[in-house]
Length: 475
Ligand SMILES: NC(=O)c1ccc[n+]([C@@H]2O[C@H](COP(=O)([O-])OP(=O)(O)OC[C@H]3O[C@@H](n4cnc5c(N)ncnc54)[C@H](O)[C@@H]3O)[C@@H](O)[C@H]2O)c1
Image (cartoon, rainbow, N blue to C red; front, side, top):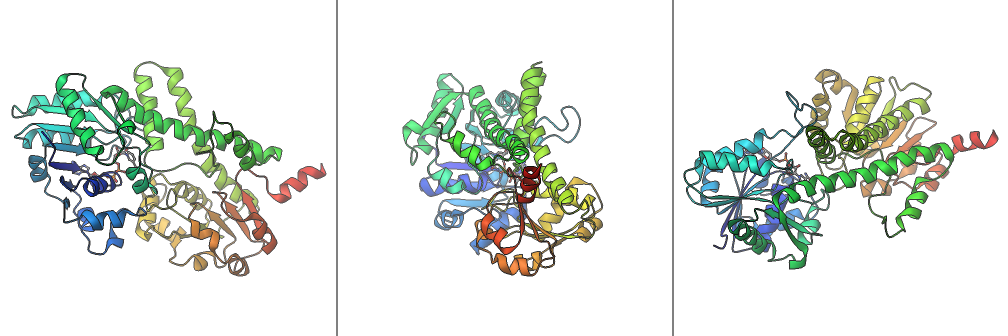
C-alpha cells in the first residue's frame, strides 16, 4: 500500500510547517491538515501569505507552492481521517495544570480525544503517527483506545517525533539531521515503518532516516530536548560566575566550544530559554523518572529548570538594582517578546517573566517586537494570573515603532535576538532616552564598544558592567 492520503490533526507550529514540506516534496500525496480552531485554519487559507498563523522564514514560499495543489487546510476533521491511510497526530501536549502530576506531567487529553475520534471514524486500516512529543509508552495507551473502540479496523502506531527548531523550521525540515521513526517490531509494524520511510525518503537521504522501537523513539525526543536545555542552563550557570569574577562568558564559551568533544553550538548565554517545549518536556521527563522511583534522575534534570528560572529572575533583579533599586514609574523599553528570533511564538518566552517581575516593581513597560501582536503580549501576561487584565494593560504599552518604545525610557532591555536590533540607530535611541541611559542586553547581540562610546551604560549577561569591574579593581 503506497500512502496516497495523509491527514494531520493539529495545524500548529509543528503540524503546519511539517505537512507543508511533506506536500511540497511529495506531490503525489494529498495532505490535509485539520484543526478545530477555525480562526487558525482560516489564517492558513489566507490569500495574503504574510497572514499565515505561523511565522517562519521560507514557509510562505512552501505554502504557495503546495496549497490548493496537494496541500489543504480544513476544519472537517472526520472527513480527512476517513480519507487518509496515514494520520499524524500533532496536537498540543501542555503541562498538566490540574490533578495528579499537576505542573509536571504532560496533559494527554488532546491526544486521547484524537485517538477516540480516529477510532470512531475509521472504516479502513490506518497508520497512526505520533508527531506530538509524548511521554515514553504513550503509544500503548493510544493502541489500547484504538483497538477497544474501533470498527474492526487494523491500526499501526508509529512514533515520529519532530526535531525542527522554530525560526529555522523550513531549513530543518528540508535537510533534517535525522528523521526518527519508531514502530512495533512485528511484521505489520515493520511494514508501517517502511510506509513512512517511503514518504521521507522522497527527499531525505536514507542514511539520515533512523528506525527504532517505539519506546526508544518516544524517549529520544524528550532526551534531545533535555540535553539541549541542559547546555543552555550550564552556560547560563557559568555566566553568573563570570560576572562575579571578571571572566567573559563568550570567551569561555568559545574556548570550550573549540573542544570537538563539546562543540560550539548552543553555548550562547542568555536571559534563559523559552519556547513551548524545553520546560514542558523536561518536567515530563522528571515526572516519568519520579513515577519509576528514580529520584536522583528526576532531581538531576529538574535542576535545568531551576537554573533557567533563576536566570530570568536575576536579569529582572539586575535591572531593578542597577536603576538605583527602584523602577517604580520608570519606563523600561523591551526589544523583543518572542522566545527567539524569526518566530512569532511567545510561549514560555523569557520576556513574559521579566515583564511580570518588573510590573511587580511598578515599572512601565514599553514593548516592541517585529512579529508579535499586541493582543498576544497581553494574553501572555494575563495567563500568569499575577494581576488583573486591566492592571496588565496599564503597566504594559505595546509599540509598532522601536524608537517610540525607547523614547524617554530609563533603560532598554533586549529580550529577543532579532537581527534588526543590531542595525538600529542607537545614537537616535540614546538621544531620546533619560540619562544615564542603560541597556540590558539579555541576548548579547549589541555592539558594546559602539554603545559605550555613545554614552550608554551597557550590561551584557555573563560580563560584569564596566563600572562594576572598576569598583572591583580599586579594592
Ligand atoms: N513547537 C515546536 O517547536 C515543537 C517542536 C517539536 C515538537 N513539538 C511538539 O509538537 C506538538 C504540537 O506542538 P505545536 O507547537 O504545533 O502546538 P500548537 O499549540 O501550535 O498546535 C496544536 C494544534 O492542535 C489543535 N488541536 C488540539 N486538539 C485538537 C483536536 N482534538 N482536533 C483537532 N485539532 C486539535 C489546536 O487547536 C492547535 O491549533 C507538541 O506535542 C509539541 O511538544 C513542538
